[in-house]
Amino acid sequence: MSATDAIEGKCLCGAVTIRIDGPHDPRPGVCHCRMCQRWSGGAFMAFNASAKAVTISGEVRLFQSSTFAERAFCPVCGSHLYSRDLDSDTYELMPGLFDAARDWPLRSEIYTDQALASVQLGGAHNRATAAEYEAKNKFVEGETP
Image 1 (cartoon, rainbow, N blue to C red):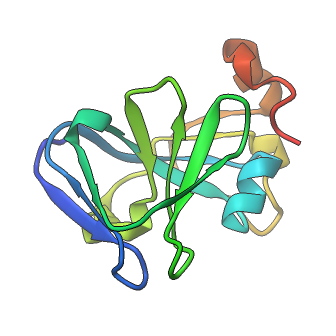
Image 2 (image 1 turned 90 degrees about the vertical axis):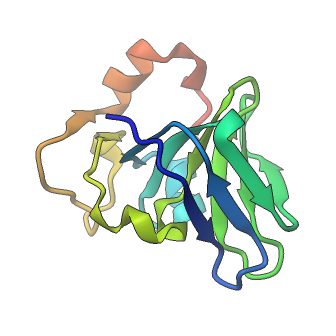
C-alpha cells in the first residue's frame, strides 16, 4: 500500500511542521522493544515516507539513540517527530502529528513478546517476537537495552 497525496502534520505547539509531498506508506508499524517503550511511554508507532518527499520546518533536536539510528523531537513542546536510520533515505514519522492518519490501518508489530501488558493491539496484521525480528535484522542485536 502506498499513498502519494500531500499531507501535513505538526507538533503539539505548532513550532515544527512536517509536509509529505510524495510516496509514503499510510500504515503505521508498532515496536515494543525497551528502547521504544522508553521513547514513547508504551509502544512506538510510526509510518514510512521517502526522505525526498519530506519537508520539515522549524527547529528540531536530534538524539542518536543507537549506533545506527537517531530520533527527533520538538525542542519547545517535546513532541516526538520521527526516527531515522543514519544511512537511510526513509523517515519513520509519528502518525499522531498528521490528521490524515486517523483512518490508517496498522501494518505490523515487532517485539510483541516485550509489549507492556496494557498495550495489546488487536486486528489482523503481521507480528514478530524479538527473536523473529532479530533473526531477519541482525543490526539490531544488542541495540535494545
